Length: 73
Ligand code: SF4
Ligand code: SF4
Image (cartoon, rainbow, N blue to C red; front, side, top):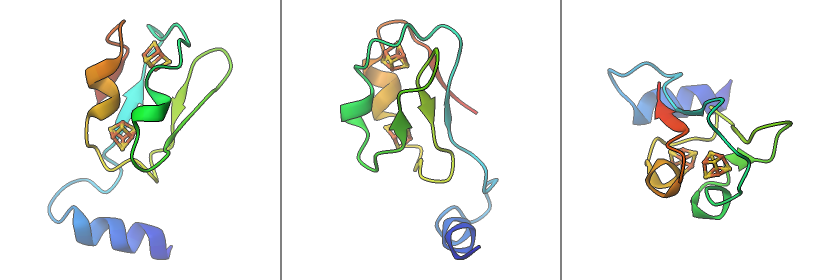
């Protein structure tokens, strides 16, 4: 609960659930994970996943993804 409160404070006026998302175009190459400054990306099965609670929407992961699998929600 505290987490969502602080997030809504940071993203005033924006949807608090806004985050980047990994789509089915992901080939699980692993390039994005080390780029995330808040460690929001984890290896899922079969594709990588972004924890929307941690994601600060910086776009660093999307910039390096070779298959353009990461989109802003
Ligand atoms: S947009 Fe930024 S914070 Fe969100 S998962 Fe990608 S690299 Fe991490
Ligand atoms: S960089 Fe793109 S293709 Fe590679 S693991 Fe991340 S989302 Fe999947």
